[in-house]
Image (cartoon, rainbow, N blue to C red; front, side):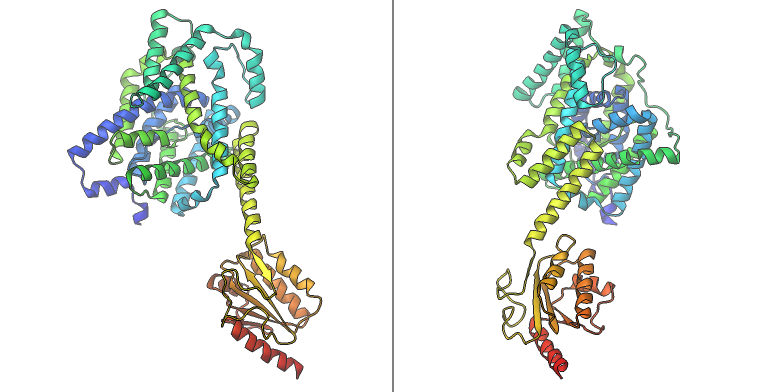
Length: 555
């Protein structure tokens, strides 16, 4: 049960004092300053009002730190969700998003309970980089209208039609809006370059709001876009659900859960590298599940661990999960007492923030590095990227993971050797008394050696080799010492091989079978007790038995 203990429990058992509280409070305030503008900007980019982003940062941010498996993880709304959240709201309404997020929370809880956390690390990097870069392109594209101040009422949801609409409305470009956006972007870039420790996003928002208010610039602001925005946390409620709604939103729920799980664990790994600690992956998934369920109860967005905010938390001196909890409380205080100031924030400044967020998400260095990889990795990267931008994120992830798995199986199948010649084993050894494959092989005996895992990608090769023998031997030795893994297709292949041998009147000897393949064969009733099927510990013993069997057959 230790792996299911929240880190807050561990840190409290170790002892918590005033010094740790001071460090966590400073870190929490620092992260809150960073998270405040980001939460609003990401909510708007997702098709929701900015207060939804703040609610998510408060509720989910607190629960992720309280129930999570990392000491310094900071959670809230992130850029990874923008595309799927926007699409769900557009197609199913905000209630549909709440239902999908609720189901995603349950999926994350189940993933943590069944210890699936360690499996997420096997998601191929080309897939992750491809859909992350695709999301970055979509986020940046969605902010062009607000950055340029274009007059567009109904913006197409798809990528290419959206750009066609932008070019069609370019004559409506608003110079004042563009200058505000460029000014905010310049401030952010300059501060990152020359004063990286300062909260560039917040400073850019404040300066942009002051300029707009002083000069009374006629630009779109949060106040004009969302005049009825709430400044309080609503009472808990729950969306109405039906089986039909559950069925139509289930794919989106799995996508949200997948994104939440993979980003949270990637963030936790980054945090481990920066602090020298070790997170509990399954508990982290449980914490993410609880946080998303809590966010739904208060009308918030999907949430997960945020890599940039977590890194800021660490650099600011965070020691325990209390820092993440305090960050949520600081944002809550702003909502309660400072939300009226949000009305002056120009939309162009929020667009500038999201341009910077999208650039950071794109991971251009890693993307370019993967383009130098073999063709198979490039194909997975570009296909996932293209499908994310042009089709749908859910489709992109499904196709990317499937293609990567198939290509991996193809590469694995190329490493498997099946021979009946005199070559030594791949590792330079042989299967008993250093005998090579055909030395002193009795008449009427044929031998095959399999080197590598036998799974569905290579299962047919043994049957093909059997058909190419051209004559039916009396005994067939199947050497399996170098077969570490046997899957269901491999078992079926061996079963068919044995059945064909029986029809031809041949007996089968399996030598050097390892524990996992032997267990799989036992499950289908091949344990060595059947007629015509024998198990021997090594190749020497198999040869002795083959001589005895051929002698019996001759007599």
